[in-house]
Length: 265
Image (cartoon, rainbow, N blue to C red; front, side, top):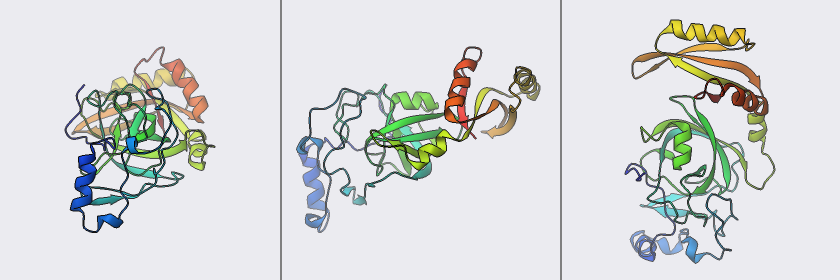
């Protein structure tokens, strides 16, 4: 799967010529701090593909791309963002990411401009309601207003592979190796539904809703949405309090509804 031209995350392992060019072009840049290549940072051996490694030295230093200065955050606690997501695949598979790991397109990771490395983010596709948790291990994307670049695995889980981009909601839920944040606790205690079907005919949706309620899912519901001018009736089993309970029910429903997925209320 080749990388979409509309997705351009930063490869901090780029050649020294790029860093030199930035230093020459930007006025007064001799006094500005620009993040260095992972190869220029002291670090232990790279972890295996997809595994979280130590946060590289200098991770929180400002860096500049195309004349724009970015300031990585020292904490992701409470961070929420909405915007456009894109994805990248085999053109970067096996290459170094911004935190020194080896990029694995089949791992659940993503690139973000300022979130701390190894932050776990809950990303929800606002078009289809699909959600997944990914770990930040790279910088980018630097195209337009896009806020996150998904790995191929993340894009597949969220239904973004086909369209290439999608509007999403991003919420920080924790950091690898750290204690659970307040946001993570809120996610753990939220109410969830399992979407089991979407129909263009309301009668079909009503029949499935009745089936779910007869099966004991009394909180099940049906929602009408418009997508590209077409009306759909979404049928969601519920309601389930807490992510652990929701995951258990989701696993059970997948045996009968293989395409079902979990959504937060």
